Length: 201
Image (cartoon, rainbow, N blue to C red; front, side, top):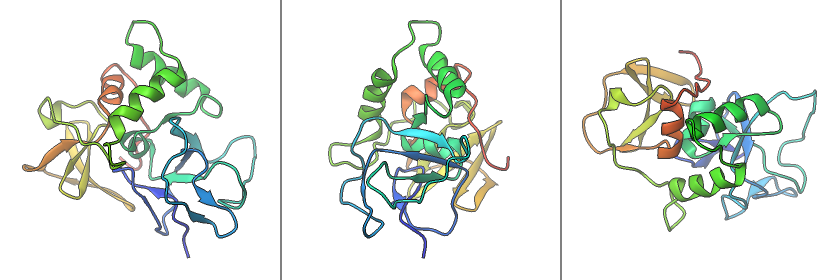
């Protein structure tokens, strides 16, 4: 039976058979004795994106009192949920994200980015914050995600793709109840040149 540690573009943590291509964490949010989630869905503002293979380190997932291993379909999904690249296992990509975030100004520290992202990813009740769309859908930078109802859509190379745990399916842009899922600061970093890893497109 799959563990409840797969993250959707809405930031929800679900249990599905698909594992995804990136790992990450939000601190310790599980009970290692039962390998189940606690009620809280984060214990730190540092929501990060990690690679699944780093220096041949093997971890028993959710089996010890350490950070909770979460999995994402791809990097675009993780960014939409409000995570950012890890400065430990993805240092070069994290620095590229940091530079794109700064866009020619003073580069923020990781905690500074985390503070901004934390305000942009969560509503007061702990749910995913949806943002108004300030531009036409297809004018969003590649890697951005939008929501229409319960569905998430990726914008990539002038096309929209319906997100699922099995990958993306090309489709027309949605026309109603549209919100921005990817935090606005991350969208600005994408517009400034950060190129996220997108699965299968």
